[in-house]
Image 1 (cartoon, rainbow, N blue to C red):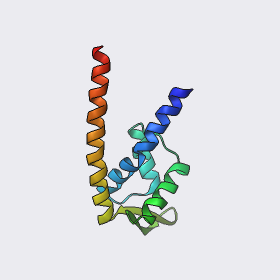
Image 2: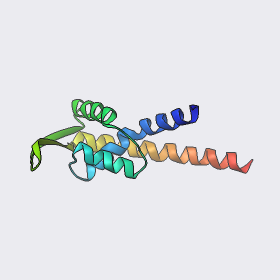
Image 3: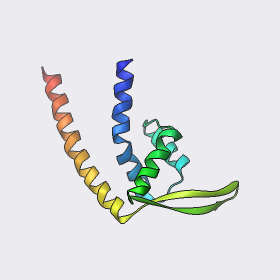
Image 4: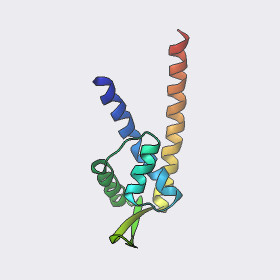
Length: 112
């Protein structure tokens, strides 16, 4: 059971980077973000995503537009701000450094 908890915590730690990366490509509706994350095996539910989107919006890393929907009320589409792009760039650099260090660590463990 501990392994599953550790794996979930690892995913949560990277969720902000992944969400910002997805939205940096184009404005996105939350269910489309969830679909993309699931394709990448970054399993997430609405109860995790919506608070994250709200926090990123409050930090001015994201903004949103309302768009009419053919199948119901208008939908909120998120887009990344200039501040968000700068923040994403820093996260990506940090990820490169961390993943390099982890990969070196894993290689050393395998060599023993």
